[in-house]
Structure formats: C-alpha cells, structure tokens
Length: 389
Image (tube, rainbow, N blue to C red; front, side, top):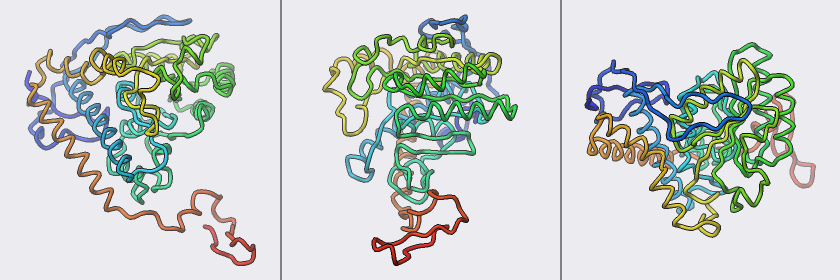
C-alpha cells in the first residue's frame, strides 16, 4: 500500500502532512493489529491485551510527529549552544513514544501535567513550533508570552497545565485537577507525569493517598528513564519497581519505547481511572541527552549504553520498521518527509527569531490578582515605579 493512498488525521496532533504529501487521500482507515514489543507487567490488576488496534494513517502520523519532536529537540540543543536559549533546558529525545502514545489514547478533555521536560508534550497537545521556539528564546509569541522558558510551557485550551520546575510538585496539582474533573462530572482523567528521580518525593505519596481515598480519576505516570539527574535508579530507590509503589493502588509497567504499548496502557488506565480511581503507569524509557543542557550525560553512563539503546530500542526506528513492513511508504518517501520536517523546524526558528522580546511592563503581569491597584515602588520606597494591572 503506497503512501499516496493515505491522508493525515488530526487525532494525534493538529497539523497536516507537509506539501510533498498533499496528494494523500482521505479514507484508508483499514485496521492493522500490532503486538506490543513486550508484555505488560501488572500490580493488583489484570494487564491489557498486547494486541493493539491501529491503522495505516496512525502509523504514518506516529512516524511524522515523533520525527518532528526529535528534530525540534535537536534544534533546541543547537540554539542553546548558540546562547539563543538561556537558563534551564531539558530535552526529550528518546522518550517520544510516551508523548505520542499517550496522546493517541485520550482526548483534549483529558488533562496532562508534567515536570520540566515538557516541549514534546506541548507539541502533542497541539502546540505549534512557532510557540515553542518563541518561548524557548523568550519572545512575545511564546506559549507563556516568553516569560516561562523551557520549563513552563502551558496550553489551557488543550488541558495542558504545564511544565513545572519543582521536582514532583506537579503531581499534587494533577490530583487536584482530577478532583475538579470528578466534582464537575466531566468524565475525563488527568495524567500527572513525573520522573524516577521524583518518585521518592513525599508529596507524591500524600497526593496518591487522598486520590485513592476519594477515587479520583488520576493517572500517575512515572517516566522512568533510569537516571534522576546523574543518579542511577538503583542508587536512589530501594525498590525501583515504581508501578508497585502505590501499594494499595494498581499499577502497570510499560515499554515506554513502544508507542503502541503506551497507547494501549493509557487507554486501559483511562477506563480504570474513570471506573475505579487512580492507577500508576511506569514507562520504561530512556533519554539520549543529559539531564539538562549543563549535563553531558556521559559521566555516569557509558557511550556504549546510549548507542545500544539507540540501536535496539529507538522508538522512531520501531515505527519506521512497521511503516516499511506494511508497505505504507518507501525509504525515500520517509527520507523526503524528514527533509521537510527539518525545513519546517528551520522556518519556525527563523520566524521566532524575528519576534520581539516581551515589554518590560510584562515583568509585573501574571503575578498578582488583577484589579487590586497594586503598586511597585523604587528602592527608597518613595517613588512609585509602576501601577500594576
């Protein structure tokens, strides 16, 4: 089946295929059954089936969006080294299957909240490259008006409640969103993402306890990339089986490098959370970059380890093999798609560079409640510098 018989679908991410693929037709949703790479490991629940329903179009959507995520993060690396991105910057390359698989299983009514490795989650929720690069470079057109930077992406209209810089602090907030969903009878769930480095935080267990008491539709997703900053999981956790950490709360261990395993697990978790309350998903994944741009990522692990994961478990290569094996596209067509993705990213960067910086008065907005007549004084406490909106 040739690529020319397929068309883009907006369920995963709200952007069409690029110009070279505008010839795609609109009706091929022939079911394809894909088996997950590994079985699920369950705690206090029966695991879902390894057979996942997909389609030709979804496979191509997965490949394109994950390739876009990868290219975007590589470009962010270059911009940081050129000092066009300042401050903290945490990249997601290697973990794309978690973002794309989760998005495929849910709707925009379902909420997501995560930590500071948030660029690809924002893209998956429908954010644009222009918003992303503008925010990374501190420009007005950024998703947080250029004031949040890499760690504080936000898209309320798509139920994405941010990137958060305080380790583990997003989990209680996510459980609070789940409480609001249940209180308002929204029939939606919240995915609260955190890393293995945050899995020992006390606030996580406090939030999980109250969520279990009240049967909140909260899904705690541990993105276990095996290193909390530079500390291996076995050095930080007596029990690194994070899916069992809920004790009385069910859990599921998932191959987080397999987008279809993630999709199946998130679909299962959503149904469970709506009917029975919270559940933990442990995504076994891996980051190729260091913890942040200040971390070379090679002092606490070997280069052979990183290249071994790339060769054996890379999430994009897995999807590429499925696309080729089902004869949905040729190697050349996929290479052409990657070239156009590169151009799309480059164009977005150029556009973001032309965008102005925030006005100095923006320092005072989004800090205090509006309408209270708050004033900002100079250092002598006599001269009023600004009246805040």
